[in-house]
Length: 250
Ligand code: PGA
Image 1 (cartoon, rainbow, N blue to C red):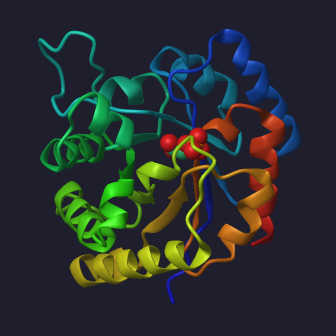
Image 2 (cartoon, rainbow, N blue to C red; image 1 turned 90 degrees about the vertical axis):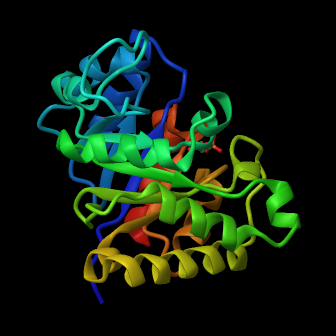
């Protein structure tokens, strides 16, 4: 089996100004040589400062979105190359809040992911079903279609991480059962291997949606869960540190 290094990824969403960098200082002090990869994705305004702070540490910094184009007349957008210029090594693409708030389609997510790869960023590509879709028995079909549509041909184990985030579990405190998580992750792993072969076997698969220090260990024990994409609980060093500690032990 391909060895996949575990990844604890934090998505700060639209939270945080300069004072929030104290949480990063605390995290760096507590996790100097972690037994897993750590990624923090702050709002665009903090990427540069956080990257400066984390330089040379075990914490990587990423954006939360990028435009598919390299530059041009796209007011308010950020290109992948700009994120690299600011010190980012990763970028989240296709988060369900982007898909909902900005109507992003799989084709757009794929183009953004391709742009991220072109600029040398690792893309954390998000997929996941809504509650209606789950209740209609469409979870695997929806996730399979999003996975196929959102990943470009050039996706590799090195440049792509996939995050399974059931929309109904994000920010709600509701978490799927461990069996439900395993069912989707096993399915996604098979799909990745079928399309990308050994590269698909090596891609990290994260679970995301209401991960907390109190439920992290049981989620990380699920087969084919290689870490988590964490929203709310990534904002505080203590909470995120608890999740990192659970992942180190997994
Ligand atoms: P949450 O968010 O951990 O606050 O549920 C997860 C995410 O949206 O990545």
